[in-house]
Image (tube, rainbow, N blue to C red; front, side):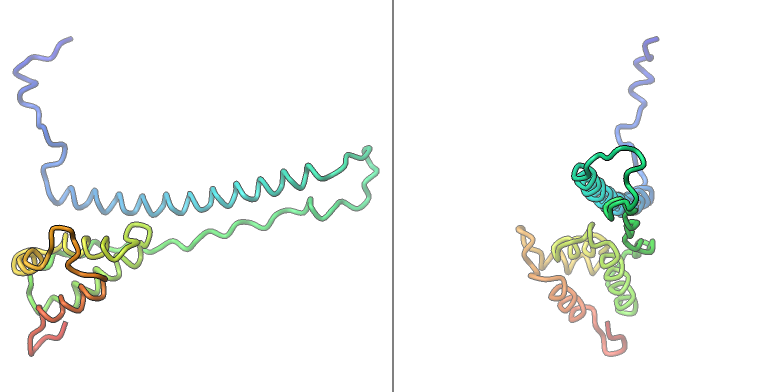
Length: 175
């Protein structure tokens, strides 16, 4: 049955209109990416163990049943693969508007978030981009003013943090 043309015109063109839903989706995708990395590591380890077992079995000569009194050491069970530790699931940092009193907490949350997910934020550039994506108001104005078109405003994440602290520090609250 063909849809009514007037019904088609009423459909939304954007699947997600709510920024909060987009933020939640981003957080869930990050968690799934972490789980996929863990599973990939486990799969690689199992593949390696399987290949070693096949090679070992190919090297065994076939004897008549009951002739093998001492099985070769190759037939021992392989040690179970150790799974990498699972990073704790952290809350997404709140946006930062430049309020000096919130600076220290904001930078701590961002650092923890990117350090717990090294596969998602492997470079200084990706860490800086993540942190800048959480800026609003005065803080976003600052980042926009110092950002170059090629993204080379800061050579390292530490340099970014140092400059960030210089700008958002006050005599009462050290960031």
